Image 1 (cartoon, rainbow, N blue to C red):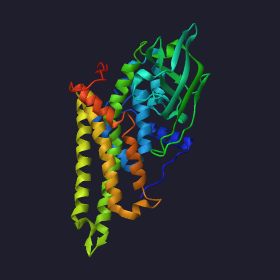
Image 2 (cartoon, helix red, strand yellow; image 1 turned 90 degrees about the vertical axis):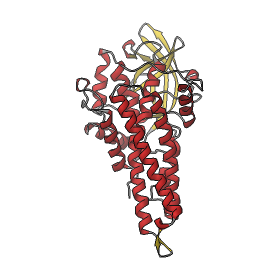
Image 3 (cartoon, rainbow, N blue to C red; image 1 turned 120 degrees about the vertical axis):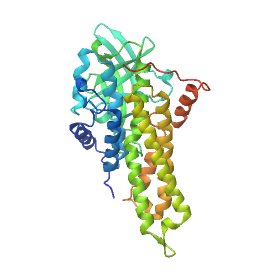
Image 4 (tube, one colour; image 1 turned 60 degrees about the vertical axis):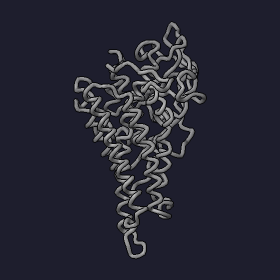
Length: 360
């Protein structure tokens, strides 16, 4: 039914680089900037097809970390001296991501403590990031640190002195997405590797996560489509009391729910793509898409296990892994609770979220 996803860093890196060779990193980017000159609607379709063929949530997570964590921040904020990074990332020659989360801080940006100190030779970075997607295979990461108590963004390369891109701790979900810790000990970064202005870190994080939330479920929608296909085929082949399993109303209703969730998610993705292609705000729509997508992935994965029955527990079957990945999807790119906070704040009934300025 599907292959077992790779967890070896070398294999994971090769798989992402292959996507780069297939131009999967160039959608929704102008030709002048090195992209395909197409639309976000084309990006959604390409990612959905990848999800349907790979059936690998971890690969989707790695792809999105590369795109929204490094490619698009550089696309919008890189100086002339930093543009060479973008070319390498667009072609998959280099792999990137961004480092936000710390052992003591995740969604609360005010608690981030990794520090940057200005010196005659550049910036000295010290601190620890955790659960950073692509870290073991990354050539560069956009690392967020406090400079003069203002959150700022820095381009850190894997070979920088004092920088350690570690593999682990291992997590049980999205296992083909290599994760790790970033440990910086007196890591000296040249001055020209400051991305954007001093203090622009919060803005860059908000812009990156807004895009990630809007489109990370494009690939996962392809997985959910195949998940539904598997369930329908099983319900037609499995017979209970001389009738197809799908004739049981309790089963047919679960399948109907899975179809409704999938089609509704695709409408949300289409809405986000339409807003971006017409240069409109997606802050609210992206939070709604992420919230609906993650909760739907969980519900449909649980329904699939229930419909398949004991066979879903066999080691070679994908259903339990999909369920584990779905639970993780409620956490990455901001938890479901964070998405509700954003939605409430934008409706004027909550606090703790400020609308970021529009991207250039």
